[in-house]
Length: 401
Image 1 (cartoon, rainbow, N blue to C red):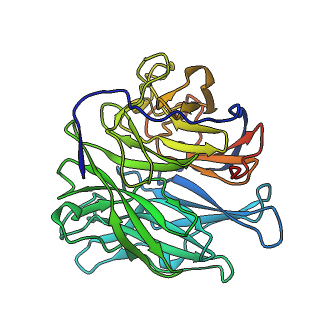
Image 2: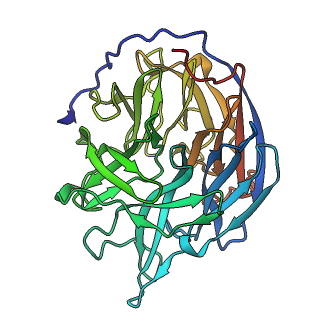
Image 3: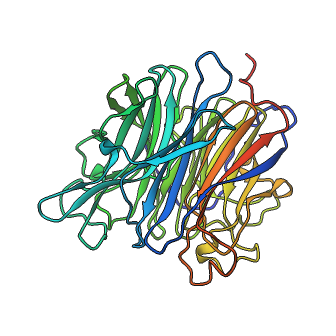
């Protein structure tokens, strides 16, 4: 089934009964700072690995060097914290995750990575987008299927990574460009993965979004099928999707150049027609041309985002500060009165961030300051990598049967 966005309608979803929504406080930590004019640490995203015989997980955070050319990234580094309050080690670049230089001068790397735990196999998956760079660091599409979804596997017992492998997708031309990039993907209780993709015939064509159902046997990630293809005939279409499950439903947020969009469905593959993000008073959210990400609590659904209208016109694309607010799962509107700043603006953009559950007591928002504006440093930015620890007012325990 193909859905085309043709109007800005209010999505009609069934009302979901819920307990009083949780509140939260924020504990902001600085992991590291770097601004030497050569590179910036960028795209930090975290995933918890359950502890063996302890309630304290270890945390892996993937991160890359932004090499001062637009969308030009190093191989994938990672950091690890043996407990949620322990010291960080790294960043370390495993040779398996490094870029590969080709004889013709092209460099093959992986960007926009999101890690996540796969409980059934006891492995951590890092999923991202394969990219090809010319010698000047520009992304190129010099071969067919240059832009594809790839993954690497981390074994926490052996403390080893596998090399990158491609997720093999259908031969249709619409999958010639197929990225899971800067996206939240999820694992169902049976171990099945739902992996959002933005797809197209090429990097220059308009993007559409779909969700791929995949299986993972501990070594190989395999495509099974995909759901609706969501289209929008505005600018570059719908891309960089993020998916979350909450109280038996699935929610998808989508990037568009002019405004963010949202939709929901019952099975993670089929969705209602996406609509623009708005506040519960009808006002437009004001998030555009960047990512939004989810945090789900047993008793509440939350969105992390950037937006206009926060005294932030000096920030490129208004990509700071990072806000977090509760979403009404019935109307798919952001509750304005619940909005809080989780990472403050200091003169640097923070549009490329991650959001993940860590323990039943806290979730994390991870981001690095993009020092891309001439006055970033004078406004207080330091090229910092932040972990905003979202401390829930009530435990995020599994839903009752």
